[in-house]
Length: 127
Image (cartoon, rainbow, N blue to C red; front, side, top):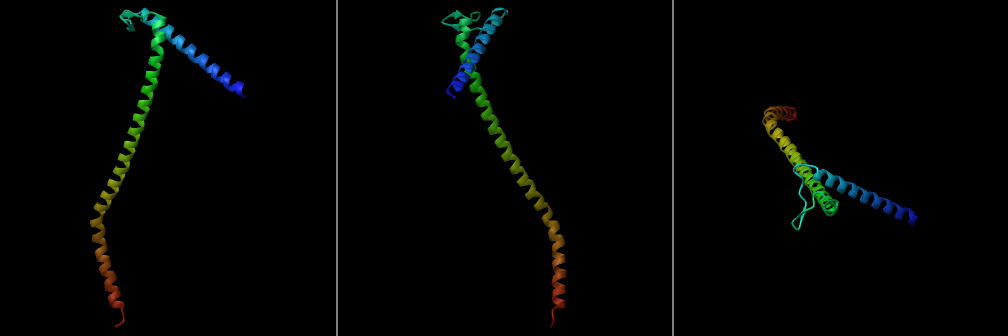
């Protein structure tokens, strides 16, 4: 069982390293061939066209991208929570508004009905 776990870790590590190497080589070739290359400067040396410079920068850029993804996901969760609270507050406000709008009509209908019921009870009560 231990060998399966270690082989999985090894395969994942090799694939991750190959991905980083391919990304580095692609970035160095791409930025070397453009008119306005991306600048990757270390100690006043432009390493934009070297794979070594991108080997240094690629993990930093990937970690930055992962951090930005986490921050944006957290921001999205907070926005969804705020929108959910706003929707609930809006629904409660609409329900109370509708109740307040229909209250005069209910009183207008209920007062005569209650008067008639009271009159019927008063008349039907034996003396």
